[in-house]
Image 1: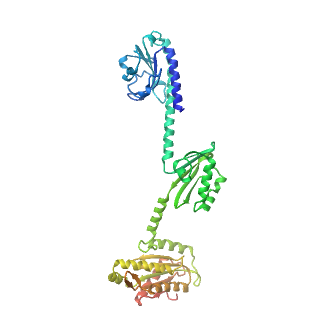
Image 2: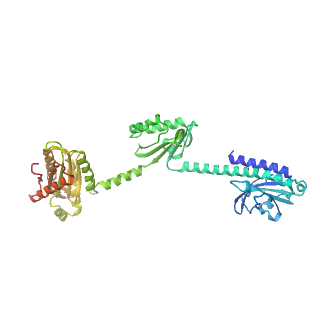
Image 3: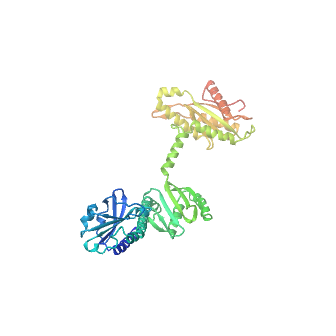
Length: 451
């Protein structure tokens, strides 16, 4: 039985008592649902009010002073739905207004007498002190019953709305309470953990969480992340679970900031968001044609390297910048077309990567020009790396469809100088050496004097 049904039973009991006091033929409980709309809640005896849920009728509200608590009504003033359903002819009708005592709902109750009951009515004299005094204590009792009914109706509606939202949201939700041996789990979470939605034994839910977490790609990381929960029930955590090619953002926190009251687990599939972020990062940091770092990404990484590696002596590990430019690239575009030129650029990028170390930073600097940051290198090693870059391009032509395109590059090399030389200054020297290589015949490496 619902709480609202219990309140309806209380109203029926109230009407039974009123019928005995007033010796009336019929008593009806009324609620002013909206202006001009009255909802009959129940009656004694029952006249099937469920078939007439709303009356288009304005209740005759009395002043709050209580001087006119009862209003005599004629048959014409009654809603047609009432008179049409009556099995007797009402010779006397009274409405008792209780709105002044209600906090949530307004309304009152209506009494009807027939020929027989009218001769026995005790409350017919509405102007008498005795009748008015009796009604004075009936009015607040009815108002409290009506308030309680509306409170329960609102609570039931709120609970129904909560359960609808709880079960229909795409995020998985698990709520455990320290007072119950069961946890509440919605449809999305039930699907994720292969459980039944609703109330599930808490130990089964805990085991499902552990089993699923152990299958994650980052299981060891998760084990470490959740270790503090064993010591501090009030802690809140947001951790990503990598499970079966999906990424779940898992937010767990105590109810009302107290782990002794229970815990909430929220599971949101953020796979699409993570993939989009990766694409955006890729587009922001990489050249779309060659897949290499773009100019901005190169500077970001090179600046960090220049800050982290202290200035070193001449024979110690140093940083070096290599710049290479495809010789006569405009001629390649003119002879073979720009699509072929694009293929040459991609092949140059591929070959350059193949002869560099994992820690080196290779980027497309602009047009047919590329730049490399050689990390933790020496003078001879840097020169050898630059020569490898030149030689790998000249080793064999680039095949584009049925065309074999000869590709050569000019290379400028500069090792970071002593003192407080900045990245821009080292790049400037490498760029100057590149143009020296162009002027001196191309397809060669030119470094600083002494390098």
